[in-house]
Length: 219
Image (cartoon, rainbow, N blue to C red):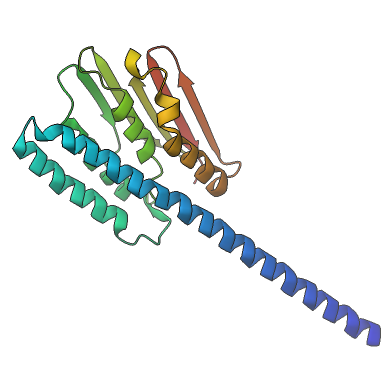
């Protein structure tokens, strides 16, 4: 009976230790995810402000509308900021609003092909998962002088979500896209490794005149 009692106490103690370790790992994971997500917001805000700044000399009215759109985007980012996951349909609305804002600064030489679903399943995805890729496409894929393009698509399939972002790569940006977009891409890679270990596939292809990112995740 004594040995049985000691054995039960040891098992109980080991169980408590494992539970504490599990909670510590979970807290560490949540803290790291929160840090990575919080990196996105100021990065997104300053990049968008720079885009609005470029509109000021062209059109005062467009600048005013851009500020209103930016305030809506920031309201979405800040609302319920403690939540890591959001409905996919809400994230799609956010991406569409951002793309509408970016349309104001592109000229007739840039072709946009946007294919985001109007309706999708009640799926939840990490907050702001795709926006850094879209930001980079508009930042580095637009040329004022030459023909350029941006293609963005998202498909909800039975067992996965497929996102693709492709943009032209003007000669002036050809050597700088990886250096300047490091925060966004590295942030995305870290979040994916924490949130979807073994359940995602991220491929990045760069040629002399094109940059393409494909992301597949299994919710």
